[in-house]
Image (cartoon, rainbow, N blue to C red):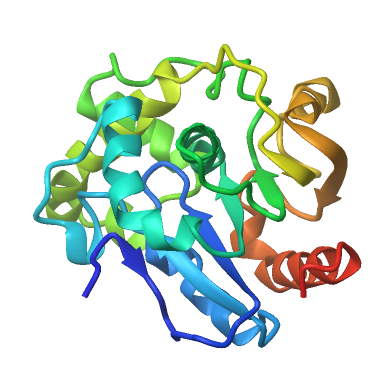
Length: 246
């Protein structure tokens, strides 16, 4: 069993693999419900970095190069097939770095790149620094962001277990800034919640990484992939149909 890449339902005959990269602190729970809504020709593959789920016993990785090194080993067979990627927030940055590395290593490009909930990768991922905060201040930021499950935030014992992973992910997000202009896909869909604070100009800066790109504003805030998950998945199905992937 691969603890790094979770496949809720293996589909050997699927036309394409959808590789999903979670946001800071996120895990497989973000994407597992999508399985019921995805088109039958799509196999769902969820990246599970160290420090969460069945990978909880592994030390979280706070360095992007080291994380990409590890993911390349775990994703090699998937990157050698027809695949698309979906990354949300920090996950879109990790997805970009994995795809850039894959292309430079001779793998094919993804058939579609979904960049969700993040300013373009040449811009800061976060609008303020969090890693220098003490635990109390950091937990308050988590509550304001509204992306950490309440059962974690309301259980101090559980929260203390997850703090190293959360801090590691936020460090990744704070440190990431891309200085390259690689065409990572023919088609890119750039997603953002209508109530998120990311500006159109910040979203536009993703466009240089694809030949054809489109911005789609979704109902909801930064975590619209939770509050409007059904609409998000149906949009993925529709985009992959319209571009001939499925």
